[in-house]
Length: 417
Image 1 (cartoon, one colour):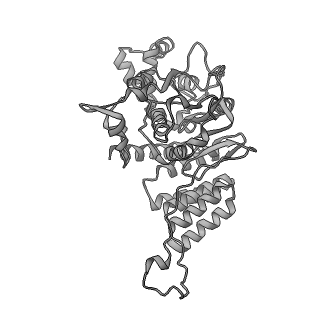
Image 2 (image 1 turned 45 degrees about the vertical axis):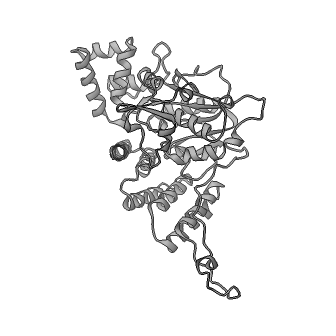
Image 3 (image 1 turned 180 degrees about the vertical axis):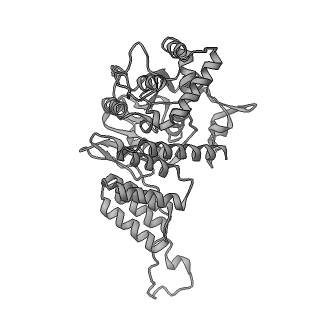
């Protein structure tokens, strides 16, 4: 990703930044602490060697007019990693609400924006979700933008390696892709439904003449930006979102927004609407049905009184999600405590408690809960990212960087497995 240097982003790089870090902050709003100064210095050395530059100043000057080299340098620093149906509960929520999201017959189609779109996995996943929910191609439009020309080229090619398919259910690959050697090529009927273009959310003129979007996906971008860049992107998202539109964020991102936003889901979806508006709730992951004693024992006497069994862990967690979904945080927290008493501790409950404490501004309890989630599940990357947000709120950039790097390592291991 990068900003168009003919329209530079009006930011003021930190005085302690190296020249390369300052350029990255100006171009894409990158907070150097999120990837580490060492990683940026290494990227400079790698790209200098690749393009034959021997002086760093000459190399950095080259980046201001060489779009292709600027892309390669940025991608050496920030790898745009994604895969199909990443966080499947997000797409399941969209699928379940597809009918209500679509406008009435004869009206404008549903408008969806994916920004940034990386190599197209996310917007194509949205297209597949809407198609399999029964929508026709003329009922929705998907725009996808990125600041990396290289990423957009890969997205347009729509040819993916096995790394892009990581979920347990890969039946969609058989339906919509054609295997060509080691690659899987997306069907042309889906490819033509996504409109890719270059764009930068930090640019005040971005999509200035565009009609509002009903759903905007902007996941796992804000956590890598400086505070100034985050504020600018948030303003852009607010401008682009329709009055009752849905903003889909990454797990750790809702608490770092500054505007008036209202959650419209449980913690596994992280969808927001503007505060003060009626919220169209997204579905909470369903609890498993509770079998009755009569069903469990067909030989029992129908007239005998049956003792109601205690709710299961899944049912209690479902209840906590439902309460959080409606903004009843205190009751959600109590449901979490009941879950722990009834079924014992779990990473999912500790993570939800951390999000609730964070929403209430109690950083100490939020931090403790996220650490407990990691004790139960050391591969809980969302807990690492949430700890990074807490550290940033405390002003501890070094610790925030440590947590983000831990999350990146966990995600890398998950992707390789």
